Image 1: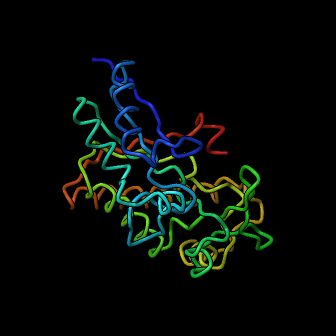
Image 2: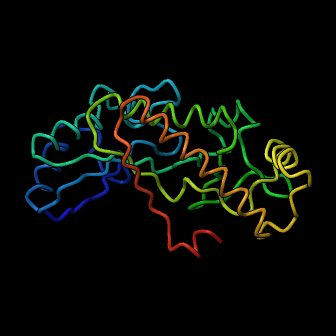
Image 3: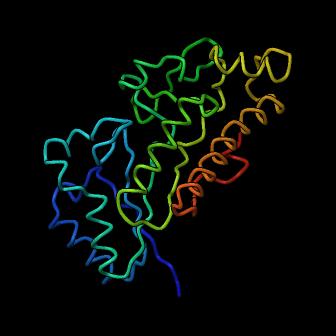
Length: 234
């Protein structure tokens, strides 16, 4: 059987904030031949449920968190024989002014000049460090929390999961690199061995995530949506 999936997001759609619209959207998608929905569960450092790890998305907080858009999508999709795969759009990217960033400066990656901020769509963003055990605990905790709330079929991570190639010069990463290699990170952020080492930090986080999903008996299907390999890697 062919699979046809669609991403569903709160931006700029009102669908997340009204159960009737959720029901209607799923019914229309079913009618159009879609078999899988990918609802966005992690956006701008906020969640669409009350979480141990992050604040609730502000518009949902106003509309009422009891709407529970993700579990509502899950229920409606299951009723229609469709699959649901939560999409963690923001990955390790956070707004620079978010509480997690303000309270945990050692979690944040930085450029060689010490600046952690990367402009994305005109907004100040930072990336959390996939090598930092507390960042790993939080990210994996968030994924596990989402998957335990209602039945889903896997997860989708986003291209924002990977860190921009200019990053990795913050004190935590520099100390870890020095400890593992005995040398300082090269100032050229396109240096191949340096790029490979940083890539492995992200791979390590994915491995730990898979192990944890296995331990918890949760779905282990992980989808990633990067660009073409060479472009994405560089």
